[in-house]
Image (cartoon, rainbow, N blue to C red; front, top):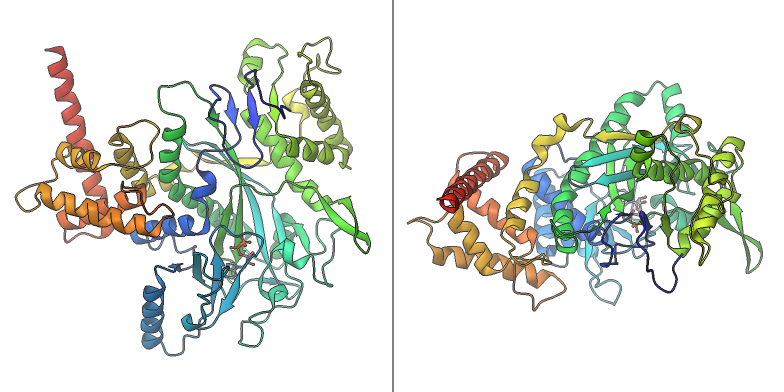
Length: 547
Ligand code: ADP
């Protein structure tokens, strides 16, 4: 712990909320720059929309969404059109404020005219989304799944999924939404932070009862009812990989800005919380991605009015301890050296205060003896390395001389899904390649926005202008799209182009050039053309350079 600042470099930095320290030049940080911004409700919805435009069938696991206030007219018009087409369609929508969490400010509506646009909370930017009316119920209750996903590396992409997760239950029996029950949060919203206040909330003392259970206990139940659990898992894995593929372009732009290529810097990894709802037919639906999922393994219990005590939660412990333990095992920087040298090394771990307490609490709360044994070693090392002023040495550290053989640890709960299944998903990584073009023309290091000169250079180097599309038209395209995107953002004075605006401009260019093809073919063709022309230009420059 370095509450007053850090002097020595560390192997692993465990930040509490986000990547925020630009003075790290080596090691690994547990957060990616820009992850918080990338998974916010509006940004996520935009990224998913782009992928839905390109690959509608592959991305039908994310509910149709509109961004408020700017897409309100579009929302009204599209709903009217769908109702005209299908008069028996009686939809419900859920409005979620951007940047909100724990169900904060969320409400359900039956008609676009019910959107609350006045008042301070109501006028916040938000996402309005089709409400999934027929969720799978267990014990007549709606529930959602929290799955932990480790993004171990962005380039090359490496994704792991925890084999178990949490199922968080509503506390009122579910009924399909009607005007009468729309406001009943304990029936419609599965947030733990809301349902804990219901008189019906049951703190689980085992993993398969109560209002929070392990996902594996639900799978067991489904399997005993004859459900195809294997197919469900494979659908979930595919949802996770596709979602991360949708997020990587934006993440790469942030990454190069904070950790420019070629300069010394840390690498990053991050544990993400995926919130997934299962439909009655077992189709998984993505609700949201959490950049900073709670790793608490105890809950508060009110002993007497106003007096609270932290009590261990076996369900959280079962799932979360394994996720943290295995994340550390996977990112352990000394693992390779240890394997090579058969020597005993230690990992220096820098943990921010909240996590230290939480880790200690987790270790203290462990019931399972084997877990306790392994975690005790971790605890000893942590205590030792976190002791102020002490420099680590094998003599001083209790238990530090012995190394825990990998074979003695429980098998990994984190399962690699990418690159393992890369060949099934690589064709979806088109926007990644558009982002690579964007980054190439950014010019100034440390920026995330493209200036007009950069855009012109991109057009020129890729030879995209001609007699039908003059450089003046290029400038107009740049100004039009950039102005619209910036008017939607927080910084209205910003005049340069963000990645999403570039992607929109790129799609426009592709549609203009390859008129008769479907969108993803248009975009793929233009990417290939640009990559080819840039490679040729690079080749020429090399030849001239030599000559
Ligand atoms: P928050 O970040 O505030 O928790 P979520 O997007 O997770 O926001 O939504 C809160 C809860 O609302 C979810 O846990 C889920 O129970 C319910 N919910 C969210 N979106 C939908 C949807 N499209 N259909 C059905 N239920 C939803």
